[in-house]
Amino acid sequence: MELEIVEQQENYGKFILSGVTPTFANTLRRMIMSEVPTIAIDEVIIIENTTPLYDEIVAHRLGLIPLKTDLENYVLPEMCECGGQGCTSCEVSLTLEKSGEQDVEVVLSSDLISQDSKITPVHPNIPILKMSKDQKIFLEAIARLGRGSVHAKWQPISTISYKYYPIVTFNLDNCTFCEDCVEICPRDIIKIKDEKIKAVNIINCSLCNQCVDVCELDAVSVSTTNDKFIFVIESTGALSLKTIVIEALRLLKEKAKEFKVHVDEF
Image (cartoon, rainbow, N blue to C red; front, side):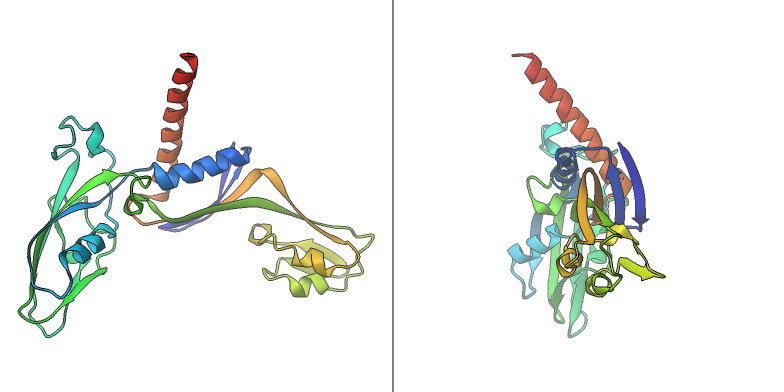
């Protein structure tokens, strides 16, 4: 198995995974979506709320705010020694107390005060609600580790997808260099120069087959491999991309070992 990083930004990455089966590629995608845990607000205690938003709406919006996650110092509630009753190892408290001092006041995610400086909103400027002068919001939010398989708010990514690695070939015996395939390609990957035709930036190919359809001489062929995939992943910022992928592989290895134990019992 080989992994080649094509593009990497703070919360966005594109990489090529080769030497694996389609089953493994899809398993990795689902592990990242469903099994890699993050911290999110799971319980909200409303002490005072005179804003226009109902308590339930405020709680829902708080739950969708991505929080920076520390996997080293926090464990899932069901795996904690406290038995999920609540302690500093499985949950963290955040408070929000703000009164309207202007005609229109916007309460932002940065107004959440965490008891742990490592567990804070990823983005400080996420609007939670608007209030008018003399209105007030006062609450305590309890954040816990959880998995995306339970609720989407615990997913570490906002999107993840993969596609088969494309292969674009040309039959020079049939090609007349008419450039029809060049003009119709939506990703601009086919180039013709000095009676030479080639595909560039092949990973951008969307496998639409428009170049194949437009060529009446069967000079263009588009196919895929079965052991090479292009992944695109965008994280919420709760965890780094590297941590997300490594944690997904670690959890997959643990599940494989557990499955083997059950198989051996037969």
